[in-house]
Image (cartoon, rainbow, N blue to C red; front, side, top):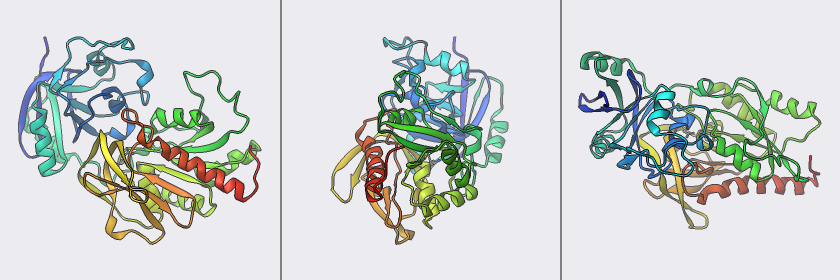
Length: 386
Ligand SMILES: NC(=O)CC[C@H](N)C(=O)O
């Protein structure tokens, strides 16, 4: 028997449903995600820290959970709101159910909610703070007080809460041919602001050896790590991550130093926002953000449209774009900026998720554009590999 659960929103609305996770009470900022599959990758994406995810797909849990699809070591979302929890999951890769996964990760969740209504509220009013609580763990009044005292996502640097503490060289779990056949590999320094595993997997597939660094790593620390090992640093990834990029003053300082060294940079989502900020752009919070796996994005140079995976609440303010930033891609949902390129440095950024986990793989080519920039520079300087 499922226990009762209650959802209280910032606007005072109350919804009653069933508990699908642990007993308890959580607060977070509500967002809606329209992906039809991939709930495991979404829940384990560290960028969802402090957010409660409303899944618009009516039945969640169909394909169960497996260890391979984890995008990080745990669920990072605060809570989950769904319409129907599948009674029995069915997939040859499934190892356990969504309910077991939520309980193992200490997550509070609620089902039997009209997620269409929640989505309409979020679309109309913008993101809402909310509280989910089970049975008697909270009263409406105390839930409401908690919501009022929750400061939300704005003006918070959350990177250190989800990232690694010490740098390491990545080696993929599944692949034991690591590095063996790569006569011409690229050495990539990856800033971990809350990175998704698939970014590192794709870099590996593209013959990159990734050294992953915590967010507080200085440009000197990164350069010296390569110098010490007598290796050339070919490029830098600025990863995805939770929270607001604007208060990340120290990180921005280091990015500026790296840009001045003309090392190719690819900024992904949070990293794309940091890249823009480091170049004088303004970042603002969106009304209800982009969260899904079917967002059309147009390359404004070639007019080609790709279908992309998205998860962000902040965006570059198009009205205050500095002259050295070119817009390369826009969202066809709301014309917000999706892709940028710098004119004075070999750097590009993508607001969506090129690693596509979950989602269509149309945007994976951003990794190729980045690698192309590296090769272009190498040619220019007649550089050797390694
Ligand atoms: N996925 C991400 O990297 C999210 C970036 C940022 N935290 C935002 O919400 O906009």
